[in-house]
Length: 128
Image (cartoon, rainbow, N blue to C red; front, top):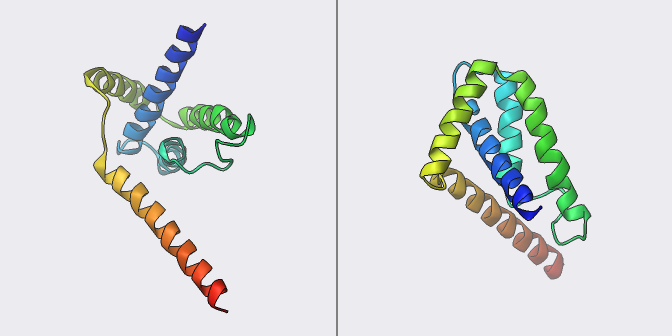
Protein backbone atom coordinates (compact mmCIF):
# COMPACT_ATOMS: atom_id res chain seq x y z
CA UNK A 1 0.00 0.00 0.00
CA UNK A 2 2.88 2.37 0.79
CA UNK A 3 4.42 1.71 -2.62
CA UNK A 4 1.08 2.59 -4.22
CA UNK A 5 1.03 5.97 -2.44
CA UNK A 6 4.66 6.64 -3.37
CA UNK A 7 3.88 5.87 -7.00
CA UNK A 8 0.87 8.22 -6.91
CA UNK A 9 2.97 10.97 -5.32
CA UNK A 10 5.61 10.56 -8.03
CA UNK A 11 2.89 10.66 -10.70
CA UNK A 12 1.51 13.86 -9.17
CA UNK A 13 4.96 15.47 -9.21
CA UNK A 14 5.48 14.47 -12.83
CA UNK A 15 2.04 15.77 -13.80
CA UNK A 16 2.71 19.06 -12.01
CA UNK A 17 6.04 19.41 -13.80
CA UNK A 18 4.27 18.64 -17.09
CA UNK A 19 1.88 21.51 -16.36
CA UNK A 20 4.90 23.76 -15.82
CA UNK A 21 6.13 22.76 -19.28
CA UNK A 22 2.65 23.35 -20.72
CA UNK A 23 2.80 26.93 -19.44
CA UNK A 24 5.91 27.49 -21.54
CA UNK A 25 4.41 26.09 -24.74
CA UNK A 26 3.12 28.80 -27.12
CA UNK A 27 0.37 26.47 -28.41
CA UNK A 28 -1.35 26.58 -25.01
CA UNK A 29 -4.25 29.09 -24.76
CA UNK A 30 -3.70 31.96 -22.35
CA UNK A 31 -6.49 30.91 -19.98
CA UNK A 32 -5.04 27.38 -19.72
CA UNK A 33 -1.58 28.86 -19.08
CA UNK A 34 -2.99 31.06 -16.37
CA UNK A 35 -4.74 28.22 -14.56
CA UNK A 36 -1.83 25.82 -15.01
CA UNK A 37 0.56 28.51 -13.74
CA UNK A 38 -1.53 29.05 -10.61
CA UNK A 39 -1.71 25.30 -9.95
CA UNK A 40 2.05 24.85 -10.45
CA UNK A 41 2.87 27.88 -8.30
CA UNK A 42 0.62 26.61 -5.51
CA UNK A 43 2.00 23.07 -5.73
CA UNK A 44 5.65 24.14 -5.67
CA UNK A 45 5.25 26.98 -3.18
CA UNK A 46 5.89 26.39 0.50
CA UNK A 47 3.00 28.75 1.27
CA UNK A 48 -0.36 26.98 1.70
CA UNK A 49 -3.88 28.25 2.25
CA UNK A 50 -4.04 26.05 5.35
CA UNK A 51 -0.66 25.55 7.09
CA UNK A 52 0.54 21.93 7.15
CA UNK A 53 1.06 21.78 10.96
CA UNK A 54 -2.72 21.97 11.44
CA UNK A 55 -3.74 18.31 11.87
CA UNK A 56 -5.55 16.73 8.91
CA UNK A 57 -6.70 20.06 7.41
CA UNK A 58 -3.11 21.11 6.69
CA UNK A 59 -2.65 18.32 4.17
CA UNK A 60 -6.25 18.28 3.00
CA UNK A 61 -5.74 21.37 0.85
CA UNK A 62 -2.75 19.69 -0.84
CA UNK A 63 -4.73 16.50 -1.38
CA UNK A 64 -7.73 18.29 -2.87
CA UNK A 65 -6.64 21.61 -4.40
CA UNK A 66 -3.59 20.45 -6.34
CA UNK A 67 -5.17 17.34 -7.94
CA UNK A 68 -8.40 19.25 -8.57
CA UNK A 69 -6.50 22.10 -10.19
CA UNK A 70 -4.55 19.63 -12.32
CA UNK A 71 -7.76 17.96 -13.49
CA UNK A 72 -9.33 21.29 -14.40
CA UNK A 73 -6.20 22.55 -16.18
CA UNK A 74 -5.88 19.31 -18.16
CA UNK A 75 -9.35 19.88 -19.62
CA UNK A 76 -8.27 23.28 -21.00
CA UNK A 77 -4.97 22.17 -22.53
CA UNK A 78 -4.82 20.85 -26.10
CA UNK A 79 -4.26 17.05 -25.96
CA UNK A 80 -1.17 17.17 -28.20
CA UNK A 81 0.53 19.76 -26.00
CA UNK A 82 -0.31 17.83 -22.85
CA UNK A 83 0.98 14.54 -24.27
CA UNK A 84 4.26 16.11 -25.40
CA UNK A 85 4.71 17.87 -22.06
CA UNK A 86 4.09 14.63 -20.16
CA UNK A 87 6.72 12.81 -22.22
CA UNK A 88 9.19 15.64 -21.75
CA UNK A 89 8.49 15.83 -18.00
CA UNK A 90 8.91 12.06 -17.58
CA UNK A 91 12.21 12.15 -19.47
CA UNK A 92 13.54 15.06 -17.41
CA UNK A 93 12.39 13.49 -14.14
CA UNK A 94 14.11 10.21 -15.10
CA UNK A 95 17.40 12.09 -15.55
CA UNK A 96 17.12 13.53 -12.07
CA UNK A 97 15.08 16.04 -10.20
CA UNK A 98 14.81 19.21 -12.34
CA UNK A 99 15.84 22.42 -10.63
CA UNK A 100 14.61 25.87 -11.57
CA UNK A 101 16.83 28.37 -9.79
CA UNK A 102 14.79 31.30 -11.10
CA UNK A 103 11.60 29.99 -9.49
CA UNK A 104 13.46 29.18 -6.28
CA UNK A 105 14.84 32.73 -6.23
CA UNK A 106 11.36 34.20 -6.67
CA UNK A 107 10.02 32.11 -3.79
CA UNK A 108 12.94 33.14 -1.54
CA UNK A 109 12.38 36.80 -2.45
CA UNK A 110 8.68 36.46 -1.63
CA UNK A 111 9.51 34.98 1.77
CA UNK A 112 12.01 37.77 2.42
CA UNK A 113 9.47 40.40 1.40
CA UNK A 114 6.89 38.93 3.77
CA UNK A 115 9.47 38.80 6.59
CA UNK A 116 10.45 42.46 6.03
CA UNK A 117 6.80 43.50 5.84
CA UNK A 118 6.03 41.69 9.11
CA UNK A 119 9.09 43.21 10.79
CA UNK A 120 8.03 46.71 9.71
CA UNK A 121 4.48 46.05 10.84
CA UNK A 122 5.63 44.83 14.25
CA UNK A 123 8.02 47.77 14.59
CA UNK A 124 5.24 50.21 13.71
CA UNK A 125 2.88 48.85 16.34
CA UNK A 126 5.51 48.42 19.02
CA UNK A 127 6.73 52.02 18.71
CA UNK A 128 3.23 53.57 18.85
